[in-house]
Image (cartoon, rainbow, N blue to C red; front, side):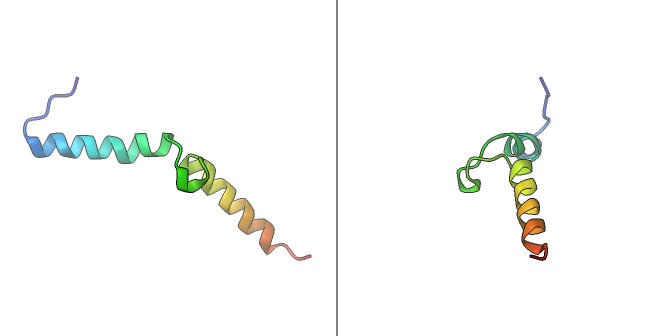
Length: 54
């Protein structure tokens, strides 16, 4: 367990965990239930395919 000296350090630790780990692993309803890396990859693929000449 990580010990925090102050309440602000504890808040910062929780924020960093949520932003750097949890949000990148959980599925997001507004991203069609994809995790962020999957959504980014799908978006890049869609843009790449849209840019190809017919």
